[in-house]
Amino acid sequence: MKLVAAAKVRRAQEAVVSSRPFSEALVEVLYNMNQEIQTEDIDLPLTRTRPVKKVALVVLTGERGLCGSFNNNVLKKAEARIEELKQLGLQYSVISVGKKGNAYFQRRPYIPLERDLEVNGVPTVKDSQAICDLVYSLFVSEEVDKVELLYSKFVSLVRSDPIIQTLLPMSPKGEICDINGVCVDATEDELFRLTTKEGKLTVEREKVKIETQPFSPVVQFEQDPVQILDALLPLYLNSQILRALQESLASELAARMSAMSSATDNAIELAKNLSIAYNRQRQAKITGEILEIVAGAEALA
Image (cartoon, rainbow, N blue to C red; front, side, top):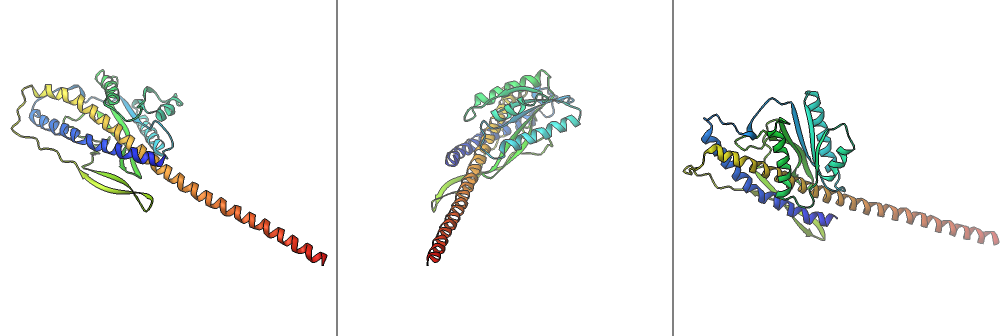
Protein backbone atom coordinates (compact mmCIF):
# COMPACT_ATOMS: atom_id res chain seq x y z
CA MET A 1 0.00 0.00 0.00
CA LYS A 2 2.93 2.31 0.62
CA LEU A 3 4.31 1.74 -2.88
CA VAL A 4 0.86 2.16 -4.47
CA ALA A 5 0.35 5.44 -2.60
CA ALA A 6 3.86 6.56 -3.57
CA ALA A 7 3.07 6.01 -7.25
CA LYS A 8 -0.25 7.83 -7.00
CA VAL A 9 1.07 10.80 -5.03
CA ARG A 10 3.45 11.70 -7.84
CA ARG A 11 0.60 11.80 -10.36
CA ALA A 12 -1.53 13.80 -7.93
CA GLN A 13 1.29 16.33 -7.48
CA GLU A 14 1.70 16.71 -11.23
CA ALA A 15 -2.05 17.34 -11.53
CA VAL A 16 -1.81 20.09 -8.89
CA VAL A 17 1.14 21.78 -10.59
CA SER A 18 -0.25 21.43 -14.12
CA SER A 19 -3.47 23.17 -13.10
CA ARG A 20 -1.68 26.20 -11.68
CA PRO A 21 -0.81 28.00 -14.96
CA PHE A 22 -4.50 28.04 -15.92
CA SER A 23 -5.52 29.35 -12.49
CA GLU A 24 -2.78 31.98 -12.51
CA ALA A 25 -3.72 33.10 -16.03
CA LEU A 26 -7.31 33.52 -14.84
CA VAL A 27 -6.07 35.57 -11.88
CA GLU A 28 -4.08 37.76 -14.28
CA VAL A 29 -7.10 38.37 -16.51
CA LEU A 30 -9.40 39.03 -13.56
CA TYR A 31 -6.93 41.48 -12.06
CA ASN A 32 -6.52 43.42 -15.30
CA MET A 33 -10.27 43.41 -15.91
CA ASN A 34 -10.71 44.80 -12.42
CA GLN A 35 -8.20 47.54 -13.24
CA GLU A 36 -10.28 48.43 -16.28
CA ILE A 37 -13.54 48.81 -14.37
CA GLN A 38 -12.32 49.87 -10.93
CA THR A 39 -13.85 53.33 -11.41
CA GLU A 40 -17.24 51.87 -12.37
CA ASP A 41 -19.98 50.85 -9.98
CA ILE A 42 -20.51 47.21 -10.96
CA ASP A 43 -22.82 44.62 -9.49
CA LEU A 44 -21.78 41.01 -10.08
CA PRO A 45 -23.65 38.19 -8.28
CA LEU A 46 -20.50 36.37 -7.14
CA THR A 47 -18.78 39.49 -5.79
CA ARG A 48 -21.81 40.90 -4.01
CA THR A 49 -21.04 41.42 -0.32
CA ARG A 50 -23.95 41.51 2.12
CA PRO A 51 -24.36 41.19 5.89
CA VAL A 52 -23.53 37.60 6.87
CA LYS A 53 -26.39 35.73 8.52
CA LYS A 54 -25.69 32.19 7.31
CA VAL A 55 -22.46 30.47 6.24
CA ALA A 56 -22.09 27.34 4.12
CA LEU A 57 -18.99 25.28 4.97
CA VAL A 58 -17.72 22.93 2.24
CA VAL A 59 -15.60 20.20 3.89
CA LEU A 60 -13.30 18.02 1.74
CA THR A 61 -12.29 14.68 3.26
CA GLY A 62 -10.92 11.40 1.92
CA GLU A 63 -12.80 8.47 0.42
CA ARG A 64 -10.83 5.87 2.40
CA GLY A 65 -9.09 5.40 5.70
CA LEU A 66 -5.62 4.07 6.56
CA CYS A 67 -4.13 7.53 6.09
CA GLY A 68 -3.15 8.48 9.62
CA SER A 69 -4.70 11.61 11.08
CA PHE A 70 -5.54 13.16 7.69
CA ASN A 71 -9.33 12.95 7.98
CA ASN A 72 -9.36 13.64 11.72
CA ASN A 73 -7.41 16.88 11.26
CA VAL A 74 -9.90 18.16 8.68
CA LEU A 75 -12.93 17.20 10.77
CA LYS A 76 -11.44 18.76 13.92
CA LYS A 77 -10.88 21.97 11.96
CA ALA A 78 -14.51 21.83 10.78
CA GLU A 79 -15.77 21.34 14.34
CA ALA A 80 -13.65 24.29 15.52
CA ARG A 81 -15.01 26.53 12.74
CA ILE A 82 -18.59 25.48 13.52
CA GLU A 83 -18.02 26.39 17.17
CA GLU A 84 -16.69 29.80 16.09
CA LEU A 85 -19.79 30.42 13.97
CA LYS A 86 -22.01 29.46 16.91
CA GLN A 87 -20.21 31.92 19.17
CA LEU A 88 -20.69 34.65 16.54
CA GLY A 89 -24.42 33.90 16.49
CA LEU A 90 -24.41 32.90 12.80
CA GLN A 91 -26.41 30.13 11.19
CA TYR A 92 -24.47 27.51 9.24
CA SER A 93 -24.80 24.44 7.07
CA VAL A 94 -22.28 21.85 5.92
CA ILE A 95 -21.64 20.50 2.43
CA SER A 96 -19.60 17.32 2.89
CA VAL A 97 -17.42 15.91 0.07
CA GLY A 98 -15.89 12.48 0.71
CA LYS A 99 -17.12 9.24 2.28
CA LYS A 100 -15.30 9.78 5.58
CA GLY A 101 -16.79 13.22 6.06
CA ASN A 102 -20.23 12.03 4.97
CA ALA A 103 -20.24 9.24 7.57
CA TYR A 104 -18.97 11.64 10.25
CA PHE A 105 -21.69 14.26 9.75
CA GLN A 106 -24.47 11.71 9.21
CA ARG A 107 -23.74 10.34 12.68
CA ARG A 108 -24.18 13.85 14.10
CA PRO A 109 -27.74 14.98 13.38
CA TYR A 110 -27.24 18.21 15.35
CA ILE A 111 -25.01 19.50 12.51
CA PRO A 112 -27.20 20.68 9.58
CA LEU A 113 -25.99 18.80 6.49
CA GLU A 114 -26.93 20.56 3.26
CA ARG A 115 -25.62 17.86 0.89
CA ASP A 116 -23.17 14.97 0.90
CA LEU A 117 -21.15 14.24 -2.22
CA GLU A 118 -18.53 11.68 -3.22
CA VAL A 119 -15.50 11.89 -5.50
CA ASN A 120 -14.47 8.52 -6.88
CA GLY A 121 -10.86 8.30 -7.96
CA VAL A 122 -9.01 11.28 -9.41
CA PRO A 123 -11.04 14.53 -9.21
CA THR A 124 -12.39 15.75 -12.53
CA VAL A 125 -14.02 18.94 -13.79
CA LYS A 126 -17.37 17.16 -13.51
CA ASP A 127 -16.83 16.65 -9.76
CA SER A 128 -15.84 20.27 -9.17
CA GLN A 129 -18.71 21.50 -11.35
CA ALA A 130 -21.24 19.66 -9.16
CA ILE A 131 -19.91 21.47 -6.08
CA CYS A 132 -19.68 24.76 -7.97
CA ASP A 133 -23.30 24.58 -9.14
CA LEU A 134 -24.49 23.85 -5.60
CA VAL A 135 -22.64 26.70 -3.87
CA TYR A 136 -23.46 29.07 -6.75
CA SER A 137 -27.20 28.43 -6.43
CA LEU A 138 -27.09 28.74 -2.62
CA PHE A 139 -25.23 32.06 -2.77
CA VAL A 140 -27.10 33.70 -5.65
CA SER A 141 -30.48 32.74 -4.19
CA GLU A 142 -29.30 34.34 -0.90
CA GLU A 143 -29.90 31.14 1.07
CA VAL A 144 -26.37 31.68 2.39
CA ASP A 145 -24.36 34.89 2.58
CA LYS A 146 -20.89 33.35 2.59
CA VAL A 147 -19.33 30.10 1.39
CA GLU A 148 -16.12 28.74 2.93
CA LEU A 149 -14.02 25.82 1.69
CA LEU A 150 -12.13 23.62 4.17
CA TYR A 151 -9.48 21.28 2.75
CA SER A 152 -5.94 20.03 3.38
CA LYS A 153 -3.38 22.11 1.53
CA PHE A 154 -0.52 19.93 0.34
CA VAL A 155 2.80 21.12 1.82
CA SER A 156 5.09 18.08 1.71
CA LEU A 157 4.99 14.31 1.91
CA VAL A 158 4.95 14.50 5.70
CA ARG A 159 2.86 17.61 6.19
CA SER A 160 -0.50 18.97 5.05
CA ASP A 161 -2.26 21.95 6.61
CA PRO A 162 -6.07 22.11 6.90
CA ILE A 163 -7.05 25.62 5.79
CA ILE A 164 -10.31 27.49 5.34
CA GLN A 165 -10.62 29.50 2.14
CA THR A 166 -13.38 31.99 1.37
CA LEU A 167 -15.06 30.90 -1.87
CA LEU A 168 -17.95 33.37 -2.01
CA PRO A 169 -18.24 36.31 -2.19
CA MET A 170 -15.28 36.37 -4.55
CA SER A 171 -12.74 39.12 -4.97
CA PRO A 172 -12.85 40.62 -8.48
CA LYS A 173 -9.03 40.52 -8.38
CA GLY A 174 -9.12 36.74 -8.13
CA GLU A 175 -7.11 36.60 -4.92
CA ILE A 176 -7.18 33.32 -2.97
CA CYS A 177 -7.51 34.23 0.69
CA ASP A 178 -8.39 32.43 3.88
CA ILE A 179 -11.06 33.60 6.34
CA ASN A 180 -8.59 36.08 7.84
CA GLY A 181 -7.79 37.68 4.50
CA VAL A 182 -4.32 36.12 4.27
CA CYS A 183 -3.23 34.88 0.83
CA VAL A 184 -2.95 31.08 0.84
CA ASP A 185 -1.70 30.60 -2.71
CA ALA A 186 1.84 29.31 -3.09
CA THR A 187 4.28 31.05 -5.43
CA GLU A 188 6.38 27.90 -5.67
CA ASP A 189 5.57 24.21 -5.74
CA GLU A 190 7.71 21.42 -4.34
CA LEU A 191 7.79 18.23 -6.38
CA PHE A 192 9.00 14.95 -4.94
CA ARG A 193 10.89 12.46 -7.09
CA LEU A 194 10.59 8.96 -5.65
CA THR A 195 13.78 6.92 -6.05
CA THR A 196 15.24 3.72 -4.65
CA LYS A 197 18.72 4.18 -3.27
CA GLU A 198 20.48 1.30 -1.54
CA GLY A 199 17.29 -0.73 -1.82
CA LYS A 200 15.20 1.80 0.14
CA LEU A 201 12.48 4.15 -1.03
CA THR A 202 13.75 7.72 -0.74
CA VAL A 203 12.46 11.13 -1.76
CA GLU A 204 14.31 13.86 -3.66
CA ARG A 205 12.80 17.34 -3.39
CA GLU A 206 12.67 19.66 -6.36
CA LYS A 207 11.46 23.29 -6.40
CA VAL A 208 9.25 24.22 -9.34
CA LYS A 209 8.52 27.85 -10.17
CA ILE A 210 5.43 28.41 -12.33
CA GLU A 211 5.97 31.22 -14.83
CA THR A 212 3.03 32.99 -16.46
CA GLN A 213 3.06 35.24 -19.47
CA PRO A 214 2.67 38.94 -18.64
CA PHE A 215 -0.69 40.43 -19.52
CA SER A 216 -0.23 42.76 -22.51
CA PRO A 217 -1.40 46.32 -21.84
CA VAL A 218 -2.44 46.76 -25.50
CA VAL A 219 -5.08 44.03 -25.38
CA GLN A 220 -8.55 45.36 -26.06
CA PHE A 221 -11.82 43.63 -25.20
CA GLU A 222 -14.67 43.64 -27.68
CA GLN A 223 -17.27 42.83 -25.06
CA ASP A 224 -18.17 44.91 -22.05
CA PRO A 225 -15.70 44.20 -19.15
CA VAL A 226 -18.58 43.54 -16.76
CA GLN A 227 -19.98 40.92 -19.12
CA ILE A 228 -16.57 39.23 -19.39
CA LEU A 229 -16.16 39.22 -15.61
CA ASP A 230 -19.61 37.73 -15.18
CA ALA A 231 -18.53 34.82 -17.40
CA LEU A 232 -15.03 34.41 -15.95
CA LEU A 233 -15.86 34.36 -12.24
CA PRO A 234 -17.88 31.08 -12.33
CA LEU A 235 -15.06 29.53 -14.37
CA TYR A 236 -12.53 30.72 -11.83
CA LEU A 237 -14.68 29.40 -8.97
CA ASN A 238 -14.79 25.99 -10.64
CA SER A 239 -11.00 25.97 -11.14
CA GLN A 240 -10.39 26.78 -7.47
CA ILE A 241 -12.67 23.97 -6.30
CA LEU A 242 -10.96 21.51 -8.67
CA ARG A 243 -7.58 22.62 -7.43
CA ALA A 244 -8.66 22.16 -3.80
CA LEU A 245 -9.87 18.63 -4.64
CA GLN A 246 -6.51 17.85 -6.23
CA GLU A 247 -4.56 19.25 -3.28
CA SER A 248 -6.74 17.28 -0.86
CA LEU A 249 -6.12 14.05 -2.81
CA ALA A 250 -2.35 14.69 -2.86
CA SER A 251 -2.42 15.28 0.90
CA GLU A 252 -4.43 12.09 1.47
CA LEU A 253 -2.08 9.95 -0.60
CA ALA A 254 0.99 11.42 1.10
CA ALA A 255 -0.58 10.77 4.52
CA ARG A 256 -1.39 7.18 3.49
CA MET A 257 2.15 6.64 2.26
CA SER A 258 3.54 7.93 5.56
CA ALA A 259 1.05 5.85 7.59
CA MET A 260 1.88 2.66 5.70
CA SER A 261 5.60 3.36 6.11
CA SER A 262 5.11 3.74 9.87
CA ALA A 263 2.98 0.58 9.96
CA THR A 264 5.70 -1.35 8.13
CA ASP A 265 8.39 -0.10 10.51
CA ASN A 266 6.22 -0.96 13.52
CA ALA A 267 5.52 -4.46 12.16
CA ILE A 268 9.25 -5.07 11.62
CA GLU A 269 10.00 -3.86 15.16
CA LEU A 270 7.19 -6.03 16.58
CA ALA A 271 8.45 -9.13 14.73
CA LYS A 272 11.97 -8.45 16.01
CA ASN A 273 10.78 -8.10 19.62
CA LEU A 274 8.63 -11.23 19.38
CA SER A 275 11.54 -13.17 17.92
CA ILE A 276 13.79 -12.09 20.81
CA ALA A 277 11.11 -13.01 23.37
CA TYR A 278 10.58 -16.41 21.69
CA ASN A 279 14.32 -17.15 21.63
CA ARG A 280 14.64 -16.23 25.32
CA GLN A 281 11.77 -18.53 26.28
CA ARG A 282 13.21 -21.34 24.17
CA GLN A 283 16.67 -20.86 25.68
CA ALA A 284 15.21 -20.81 29.20
CA LYS A 285 13.35 -24.06 28.51
CA ILE A 286 16.45 -25.74 27.11
CA THR A 287 18.51 -24.55 30.08
CA GLY A 288 15.88 -25.92 32.48
CA GLU A 289 15.88 -29.32 30.77
CA ILE A 290 19.69 -29.48 30.91
CA LEU A 291 19.62 -28.68 34.62
CA GLU A 292 17.08 -31.45 35.19
CA ILE A 293 19.23 -33.96 33.34
CA VAL A 294 22.33 -32.94 35.27
CA ALA A 295 20.46 -33.13 38.59
CA GLY A 296 19.12 -36.60 37.72
CA ALA A 297 22.56 -37.85 36.76
CA GLU A 298 24.04 -36.57 40.03
CA ALA A 299 21.27 -38.26 42.01
CA LEU A 300 21.94 -41.62 40.33
CA ALA A 301 25.65 -41.25 40.99
